[in-house]
Structures are given as C-alpha cells and as structure tokens.
Length: 112
Image (cartoon, helix red, strand yellow):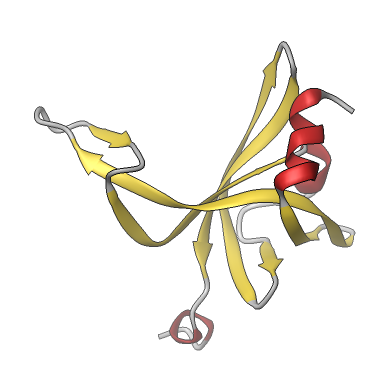
C-alpha cells in the first residue's frame, strides 16, 4: 500500500460506493468545497472561503471509485451523495482519486 492510501485508510471515514458490479466499501477523506472569489474573477479553493452548499470533495484510493461512473451513489453514514466527476492522480508517494460530489437532499431525491 502506498503512503497516500495508507494515510487515507488511517484518517478516512467508511464509504460505500455504487459501482457497475454492485456496492464496494472502503475509506475516504470527505470535506465540503469552499470557494473564494479572486479580485480578477478567478475562483480559488481555500479554507477561509464560503462553503458551496451541498458540494463535497472525496479523496480515496484508486480502487474505491475505479468501477464507478457519473451519477453513482456514494454513502457515508446517513449521508448520501452523487458522483459528479473524478480524477486520478499519481505522486511519488503513491496515487489516489479525487472526486467531486453533490449531497443528495430529500428534495433532490423526489426530483423537485
């Protein structure tokens, strides 16, 4: 196991992911997306920014999201999310997947 995957396993929370072949379980680091507008119109991701309601980022090992796709359901405890995008990264200390999620609410589940 690479260093990044080992650290995700150590500090992550249990995650269940809907895949093409059923549900898969693992651990991931999940946190809300926070944006701040820059002076010239760009957008930065910084801790002091404003939380974008319902948007989350997930860091996890490659294997957890390998067989998932746009719209896959992701469950963490009592919270449900939809996978919007995912990117794989490879660093000298290992690889990981970074994914953008949208939190499901009762209104979104009803199609309203």
